[in-house]
Length: 194
Image (spheres, rainbow, N blue to C red):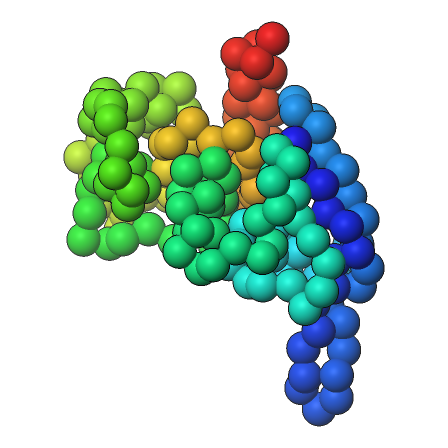
């Protein structure tokens, strides 16, 4: 499903350095993997390149055997919205939208058919936060906000979910719940594939 070949990303600060240095990786359908490393080791940079937010300095990324690393920004945006569910490191929601509207937002970024409200309500129920549908972000706990970002990442039935430190701002109990939720989502996706 996802293949990375000789991926590099070079930045220049006081001097030139590779945040991502010749990464090779293959992830098959249904796999649940974690990329670990110390702070500043390039994990977020790697995920941002895979999702198309950043472009690599060199190397290639293939998604379902189609090279995506050389696509235009518009094409990468479409893939990111349509095929990739991205859970950012920090909880990013729009404060002027309620929970349901925040979750449904990706549906409206590309022309598509379907019932966004029905899908959004289904995701709220799946993540155990259906009672928060009309709440606003300022009214939610950190764990609840994280579940909203997970639901939003799932809105368009992504083929892959990228989660950048999805538990970094959570307490132990919420960390366990979020990891359990992600594993359950992966299990359901595998069942749908096979």
